Length: 227
Image 1 (cartoon, helix red, strand yellow):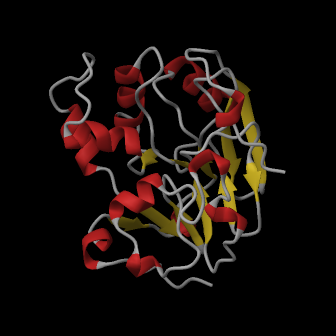
Image 2 (cartoon, rainbow, N blue to C red):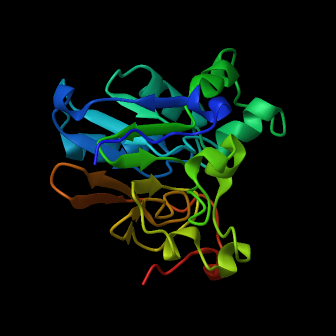
């Protein structure tokens, strides 16, 4: 199925699509949260060719030791692209004004799409509500979706009942290992919480991970077992 996902007019202006035949390997990477050294380790392991593409699920920044370092890595390499995460959105809205913020950083966050799609894949930061059409989602919901008919980290989670038609790649909700479902792939594996940074190899249908460091403590109740 290669039908383009259709959102509301407001979201559609922030939806980017690309064709996979113009790229070699394609990877989707989980929340980096200001950890450039770990990201550099992952990118070195991937051994990117000039026509490869890396798509981030957002939350490039905050919580880790060096958000500007991650911003610069992604901005300066045309092979690296990202959707907007809720942590970028907090800066865009002015809810957060971190001391590391530089001229141009907020504008960069504003330029990030809310959704990226290719083939039958859809990349958003939070997820989608399985009970509603994509056109009924606001940008904010795509950034923060977790348990639309439940209670946060107590679940149930949106992907428990989601059955397509698109395969959604997402971050936002921290898991102790990747979520791998027919129509949902969760990639936030706690990079900043001492877990791993995870990439999904789209061509070869496999996960690639590097061990991360603990920059913040996190309660076990806020780390999901995707079993």
